[in-house]
Amino acid sequence: MGSNPYPLFLFLLIHYFLAVGAAAGSRSAKAPFVGVNIGTDLSNLLSPADIAAFLKAQQIQHVRLYDADSGILSALAGAGVSVALGVPNDQLIALGSSNASAAAWVARHILPFDPDTPISAVAVGDEVPTAVPNALPVLLPALRSLSAALAAANLSSIPVSTPLPFSVILDPFPPSQAYFNQTLASAFLLPLLQFLNDTGAPLMLNLYPYYAFMQSRGAVPLDNALFRPLAPALEEVDPNTLLHYTNVLDAMVDAAYVSMRNLNFSTVPVLITETGWPHNGARRDEPHATPDLASTYNSNLIRHVFGRTGTPMRPEATPSVYIYELFDEDLRPGPVSEASWGLFYGNGTAVYLLRSTGAGGFLANDTTDRTYCMAAEGADRRSLQAALDWACGPGRANCSDLQPGESCYLPNDVRDHASYAFDSYYQSQSKAAGSCYFQGIAMITTTDPSHGNCIFPGSKQMNMTSEGSNATETSKAGIPPRLRLTEQNNNIVFMILNMILVVSVSTMRL
Figure 1 (cartoon, rainbow, N blue to C red):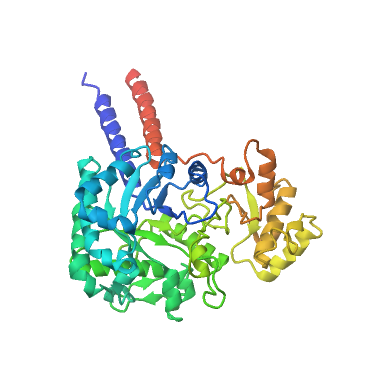
Figure 2: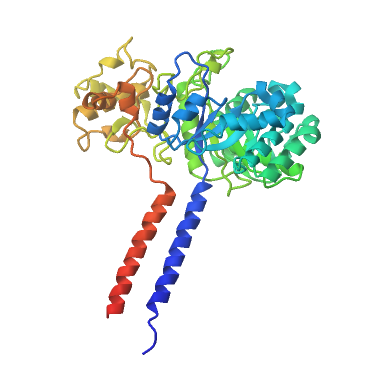
């Protein structure tokens, strides 16, 4: 009788599935992410512990800090949040002129926290070529000193780079004709790219389609800046490559790729360290700084990144992004818009509704047990008004908060008022099937539509039924952490292995 082939077969299958699981886990680690910038220039910043709890509740796993705030870094220990740690511009001279200063900085700001609070990158300075051009000569030495200090501490896996303004790229539209500012190219950008290429660090860029749109004087379509779909005839086409650009951000990223290629670098990745859209501004000077457009841009941005579509020039590479910013910084000087980029107010309540359902769980502040009813995308205004009138009238929904002067009166538009009325009716009907339909112009969402001081009925009910939690915490917390993709792979692998073992043993018994 010949030898039993099943042990060898079983071994090969086990090896195969473990290899597949490991490869999938490796790929997941490189998946693009959406993070947030956390500025602290606000009058009522949450405590570090509350910030950590807030990030966990919102399923935000990547943040960028502009300074090494030890309180926040300590509070984030074990929270599952990776931090891109900033070095302020006023520290560049010290770090760039002394290797000992760089080593001391690493010892003080990274070694006590990593790996409990994983440091994903060190962002040295911020827009130095335009913000503090006199510090440019010490920027590269500071990068090299910090990189060497990290390597000496066995932390060479932490990349070191510097966030640059998009203005270092000239003639960016169409992307194929873009190039770096020649006054910076040979003295600064060429050695910077060589450093990034040698250390495996990304080119950090602050990219704002909002400003590209504002400064274009009508040449850039608003829909193109907002990731809104365009008719093929209206898509931006690069005449040299014939590539179609459906959004401004992709065009800006490809302009960076072309600029780097002109200096013979083609493998340095791009990391978008800032992007966003203001929700308020001076009406005359910045009429497009509105909550609706900010929601549209950031919602579409999140879906775009998690969709992993890359750019027309590099469809295989989707840059990760940090949204500017998590909280409104009300103490920032300058135009009205400077204080109005936050997704949330300083107390943690949403400035506006983000429509990013299904985008990897990021900012999904509710589980499927917490559902809300809101106006559907693209619903006709007249139909919304009719449904609003019915819900607040014959439907007997409680619409008192929509009255002038009440918490949900602003913004005073049909869509927002209809969403509140729809949810009020839906909750009053105990979320019964068909109670969120309204002739097809309503939809169910798991994302809390509450914004500012306007708390939707679904959130109010959750607040009343929860114990030991304030209103803000109740509407944001209670979210089971997402399974990491690697954990899912492991579960699948072991389930398959168990099935193989059962089948194998049964077969050998036969």
